[in-house]
Length: 182
Image (cartoon, rainbow, N blue to C red; front, side, top):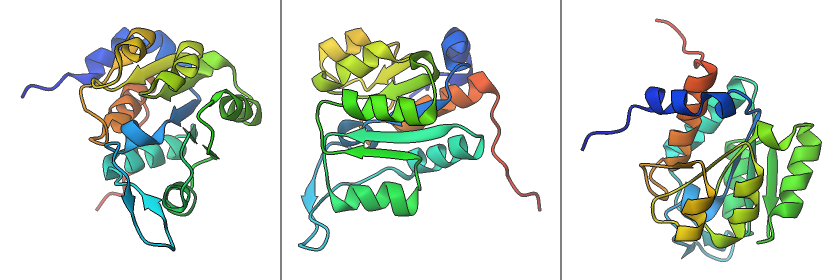
């Protein structure tokens, strides 16, 4: 399967992507394939994550951008993934009405709407998708969500779709990872 040339796609959205200072991600259906499983009493309901998304978040943070998670879910596994492992800048959990979490992130980061990217896949994500500077979703999202975004990823839920959008930001802003030489 021939993949999109993300450097070329980034050029199409360059004006919007260059302004991004905060990247915000939904969890279920974006950073996961949307499945939950019981992980025992200590953890509770948990999810499978894609490592490409996590590494991409680290690349953004390394370049000075902020990373936020806003999710309607509330589980210990999700909390641990994003606070202990990835150390994201902002984690807002447990409210499907994501406007409150969004406003907190925006105020704490000191940014404007046009400086925020959001990727979400559900009907309750639409208010944020319409408000931010750059919005994205996955191909399997409901039609109303697809109609509300700037970009529909090639990769699906839990398959690195977050990283795909991260790479668009990287290419538009010419962000390069700090790789140690041999």
